[in-house]
Image (cartoon, rainbow, N blue to C red; front, side, top):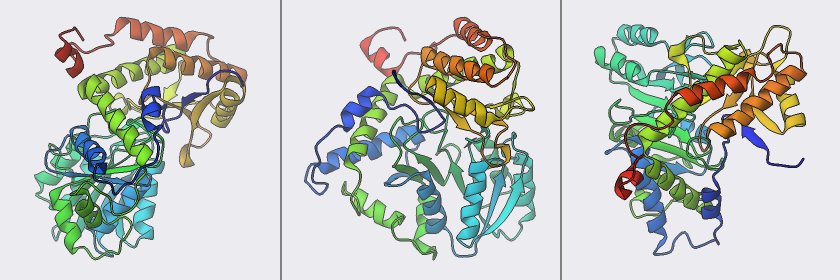
Length: 406
């Protein structure tokens, strides 16, 4: 099919040409005297993205799932109790991993379309007088349902009852797109991946580990090898890795971190919120449809899960969009399979790119019998973006340095 595939799943996301060019490198010796220049640029550049001064970023050749496993096996003992909420496919999969690895999971089942239930976390932590709960798990952004949770509120709940458990946060579809604050929220392990807000191909697991979690890892008895924090931290201290890293991915990461720094993280967050607002305008004002996220406080700025009308299969919309219009949309997973399709709006994108996704989704819906007004979603998104500021009032770091207006 002529033209470029429009990739609008919530990960992998579009890789900027600038990052692709940076990754086109000859192989080199990852034990050479100059290799630490690259690795340190990546590890140090990740700290502002995680918003930490004290925690240690770690890069695994894996997906975010590998970082899930690393958090559990490094910091906990076999059979330890963890507290987690399940409100979408990815929070479910993390819980499933906990169970399969032999941990005792207290599950807070929550309707899909809502976020992490802070009051129920608080109730469980309050009742845990003997502090049997060793870790609290939460997904900041549930990719399957387009729901963002309040991590700061979970930390406040833990602190209000002085609970000493570790706090593990899945920020796979949030990092570098939605505000995340490692130090301020006292997160002990943040889990993420390369293929979303960091605008890279899949294959790199990125995590950040607090000093408290690193201390726990020294005495924890769960078995681990490939994902051992100690091996990584020791090797990284001299600028190397305990085994062969993906060299092109490191060059790509260094470039993506430079792009984020040039735009300024606050501007990145504003851009995602602004673009997401246009998608929601298309859904609500144009198409007159609903999101899986059932209240505005849960709306995600990185992915919108759009409910299809009764009698319509979401999979048909997705298939039609792909086969006829060369547009890749995200599918409904597990409990919401067939009930929705997802538009990912994170990473390297702008208004005109998103208008293509909205137009393609609109045509696909019309083709399979969804009764929407042709052009309504596109018009609603255009009206939203034309009436809202595309840029923050503050300057980007690069603009400020150059002495030009943001």
